[in-house]
Length: 168
Ligand code: NI
Image (tube, rainbow, N blue to C red; front, side):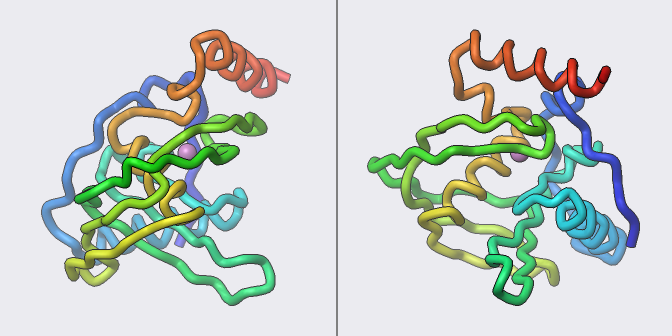
């Protein structure tokens, strides 16, 4: 396993639409292992492949609390089959927009279909933090960042702040 560099705004690769995975093989599992290690080291709770420069529809996640054992999750070619009309706000952050947090409103519950680490199809309902995180990460697969849900002023300010931190 190896740590990968995490892209940050305004890297244009973060705007790419990622491609479906055709085969779940050892090379893909090696990428997912690297992504998980990179996410834990950051530390973060979710990471999409494009954040390490791979435009593939792959996400890793771990929502376990600090006092719980790790619960790594892997999502390949995820789809949202259904989203609730009810929405909920959550203060989001992103490893590609470091140190910026703001409230985003998203459907409170979603039904998902994806392939897991072994390439098996899984269907699952998500709510709470799980629903927030999977929708945030799936946005990455379509080149959308959480700051794209904010006003233009807030978005521009966030990108400027990250650029300034990087230059410092
Ligand atoms: Ni993110």
